Image 1 (tube, rainbow, N blue to C red):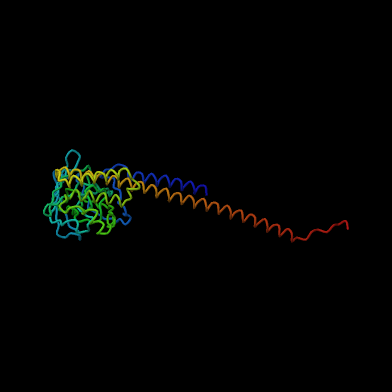
Image 2 (image 1 turned 90 degrees about the horizontal axis):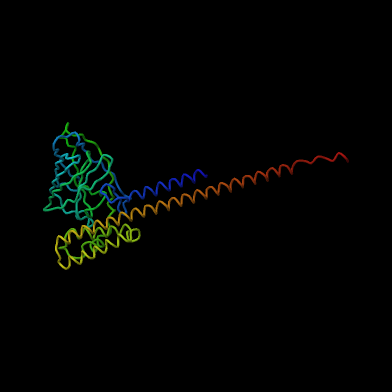
Length: 331
């Protein structure tokens, strides 16, 4: 039993450390699930090894069942140990077709180990967009997903485009399957009425960036950032209020857009902190419950062992008492 308790304590430390590591570093390569992301799903992408390529490699994108009319292509070229990517997309519909919580698209690189790197927002103009990005990955797949805002750190499951197997570059590159995790559809949702008020309840002529800012604060709130990341969430709310006021006063559009993006990043930081703190709390609660159960089992085992010893003693006494006593020879 002592060994069991020690194992539980070791598990506790490991679980808390894992939860802590999940939220460290607000980088694009350290994804943290959104609130309600327990219904995540896996998907396989075609990762391409560009190390063997000389010069640029042209990659085409294929559509998924979510958006049959879309298309895309990318040029990938190695420069100074980094891969430069220039991607062009066409035929993309407004992301809100998937629900009011989806406002934009994000371009991702996926490593063979399943690490997702946010390469940038796909900002539509007449259904098309161009994205220029770079990555230190040498082998990766590329996908485009519908998202609630540009600063997400893990792709959602609204995958609309993914690169093909680069068959026309056979012999020039190597194809590898890469399995990665997607957030479930319910990760960002709530009722459409609440979303309508939370995101669009100001002015339909509002810049997209400000809609994303309002959405990011809503998502952070859904992740219990008010409780688990109070200071960061309050900062995001304060920045959002100032940005909304600047928009209403018709200040410089570019300044409002920049301030909105700052709100998104601050809200995402608050969300990540909240998820990390909640995960650590859940880990501690689970460990405490397991330790309590182990201690109760140990106490029950000791009680059972004591009961059995007492029962054996009683049995021995009864057997002894039933034996005939020897007669006194002096009579």
